[in-house]
Amino acid sequence: MEETKLFLITFFAALIGVVPPGLVNMTVAKTCVEKGKKNGLYVAIGATIVVIVQATIAVLLAKYIFRNEFVQNILLRTALVIFIILGVYFFIQAKNRKGLQHHSQKTNSNSIFKGMLIAALNVFPIPYFVAVAGALNIGTGMNYHWIRVIVFVLAASLGTFTTLYFYVISFIRIEKQAEAIAKYSNYFMAILMLVLIIVTLLRIYYT
Image 1 (cartoon, one colour):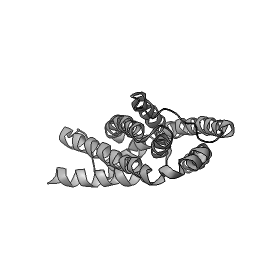
Image 2 (tube, one colour):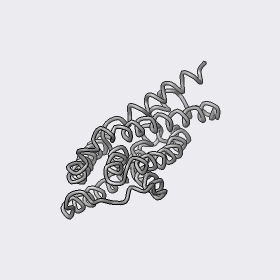
Image 3 (cartoon, helix red, strand yellow):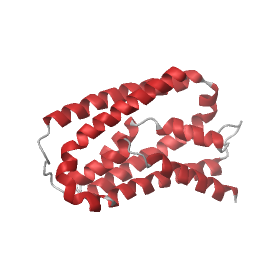
């Protein structure tokens, strides 16, 4: 019963955490527009694989992160550098882009690695899952309860994939606007990186 409660809470926490437009889900949508629905799904799968690792790390490090502000600061500063680099990259891509580039929509297994890379660059899920794990009292005690850890990681990854899959299937509704979306998607991603940079700076300041 406790494991079921843990699964449901973690699942919906992960699902809701990915709903707002972010680096990973916007990459999934952008891939659907440019390379087709199947490649977008592959990106979602690749991102979910990394989330499994991130959720596991979050649980294993929860007790240390809650006790050590230095670790929190390192994570935030790392995120700041990554978001600055990505923001510059997307802005340059937006300036150089001329309408929709008609890539082949053949399913490409490299999209899995693309999803893994983007998810790996997005370090925010680690402190997020640390907070969730702390709230549910997982990994914060003297010993790890491995069944609860496995349930937590499974729920976090499934919740994330569910939201990303919704982004994939919603591509059907926006397919007719693919030209306009592809044209301005890089600008949107650049603005998103700017917002994340500001949020990260604020978190570093108040931490």
